Length: 131
Image (tube, rainbow, N blue to C red; front, top):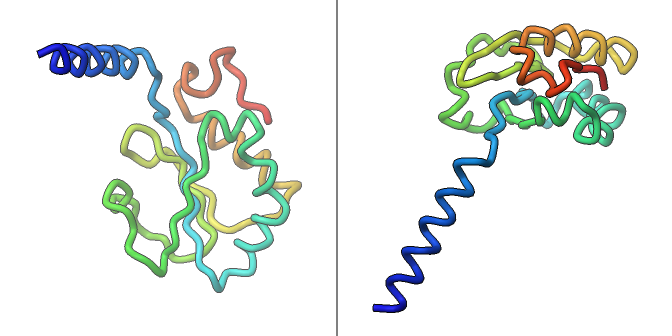
């Protein structure tokens, strides 16, 4: 019986921790292909820094290979014809997208305009989205 109480206590404690842990509601979905040269360029120029930026904290990157089965949670995304295509995903729906990779100088401002479409509380606790 003491083992059961211990397991029950652990389960209750874990439930409490999950309740106070904020869920990441936004993601930046990157639809890509192994044959995509522009995807490779994005990974060289932006990829190493993305997760360290405020953008990466607001909308963590999720890579989706269009040549494989798209995860069920993202099958509602339609019309992916070119790679890379970046889709801002928030609470189960598309907020906007960037088709193609225009280079490092243009990517960050375009991404910021996309992130500006998020509710202010999601964009940043202080209301900023700048990387």
